[in-house]
Image 1 (cartoon, rainbow, N blue to C red):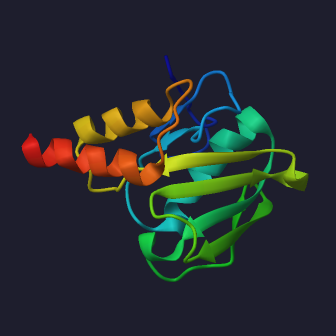
Image 2 (image 1 turned 30 degrees about the vertical axis):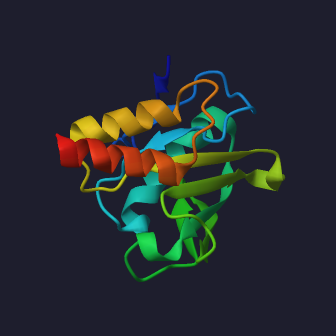
Length: 151
């Protein structure tokens, strides 16, 4: 069973986020996130605020260069604090890595494409948040797209 997280009342809009409920370190993914667009500057603040409240301050986010619209800004401000953004060609598409302040913890989230159907997104996010999940992002997104194509 997975849990769905919601941001503080002052953050808007709410991120569409499903997290693995036990914070297990044996899974490859800690959950799934379905942003509403490919604008990282618009999408990340609500996500970071939500994860801050659950895991402590996020200090750095690693993103795939090709998955997000330009400009690729080096940082954003969330709740009055600076969060660094790292843009990498080596970061797998469909994967977002968030690192907590002082490197105490990290979270890997499946990023569902903004144009996914609600059914496909829900299936992918629930799979990514399943306790004991050992699937990688590419395989989960490929499966989601195949289900949509057969749909």
